[in-house]
Image (tube, rainbow, N blue to C red; front, top):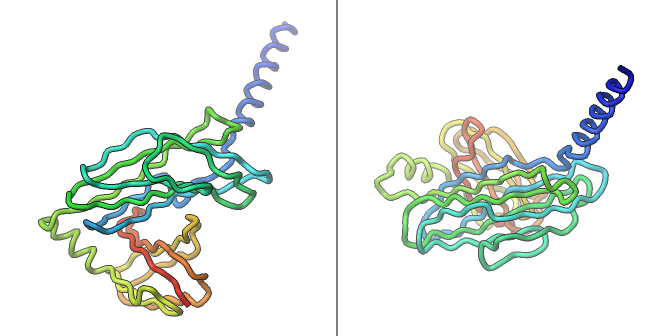
Length: 228
């Protein structure tokens, strides 16, 4: 009986140790799916970040899972180490320090075809290779017949762009607004209604992604350039 109890306790200890070692070392922001509506001949930037939750540096790898994209569209991928000239099969990031983020960033340009691109990559910490996340990037370019989408897109306006200190926004009804910097870090979030003004005086010069969402689903995104 003692031997059986010892085996059970040993198995429980091994399970607990395994579960602890497989604990997720990062969190995904803003979420594991980035969805946006784009336009032909317009370069869109889609970023999903991995925030280090530990007190040590983590080392992240990534690998292509699947790509579905209309013909004649162009897409490239970047991480915190390098930007590639295509959707390469795999890569690894520079070490991510505590409280900092790694990221996967896609540049997608739809040229002459309408449709939807769905691109998925797996991301994992090299210390726990069995614990993987799949991040999904979705961009849709609608035909002119999609009147509701076109009207919704046209009702989301920002100016001036580039902006120095004050950005004016026009949004359809009440929406959640968020802004990410070029590293994929969320630097601002708020709820906006109709016309509003946003101070960018404390933003450093660079490119930012501004998104409005409804019911926690990212619906529309635009790029802004801050230049003081």
